[in-house]
Image: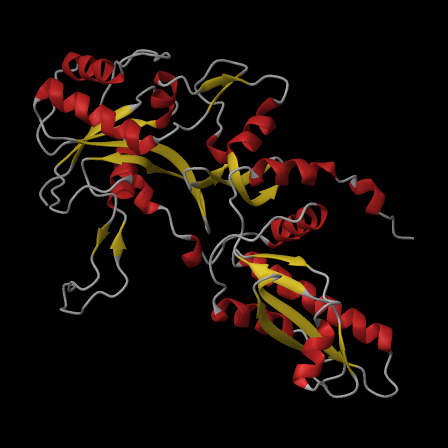
Length: 393
């Protein structure tokens, strides 16, 4: 790769619904004395794409929170008015991408319906008009876990690979790379962000000098698969989700529950048990397809002279910990009536005297979350917190 140039595209007018964005871009490029060359990558902000596609809406009576709920597939975490949500595209971002910047008062912009398709349409139009083979990125500013500040990332990608898998190749010292997958589209989007800005009125830039041989990949390839997500849900959201499932149990989704997931959840719960073994809890895991993909039945040991009620409470707390750990790993669990099979489990295992079942939970993959986000937000807001608050004396 030679010299890298990032060139701002100035002079793009205010974009409205139905405008031909490629024509506006080309007019601005030519008006600024620029041109498009083969291998160039055109980065365009999400905001102008959403405006051209009519994805700007009136805030209305529901307000911003209502639109956030509508655009949310799954709530990951929240604090005050801020919601970190997964959109239907799979992006995890603040307020599901709903934004009030650079739109008229009382209006909000939403993410494009299909940013990869938007990028591909724009790429085809630019190539047809110029004859140059170019790439196109649709960019947005996202926050990042563990780091302050925002950075431009790619939410739509066409004509270039969004990721480049370097596993199996060698580094400069000859060592074989084992885990390196380069997020090329995000790197280019971040570079383009240096020439664009919300306050500068520059919604596009040309990035020149990048040469790649790998085939194109859409930005959707940047979305991490759920099974690889170590930070699927915050503990607070796991608690809220448990309440929602108690009120309206959802069916389990298809797929198995890996043994490693169950072991991690139970290991976390057992870590809090008393070191002397008093009130120890043993988790029996079985598969009962007609009840749930996996059923967990915890047993607690009530020793002679010990407080039976306190022991049962400790067992219940351990089971709640298991449920939270499962939710945190992205799995669905709920209380189930174990009266029909707890005795059978007891007999099959020849459980010694003094061991008592605490309850039963079913575990599986989550159902289709297409509308779960809005429900979770609404249910969380239903709680009258004042009912549960008491002033200390």
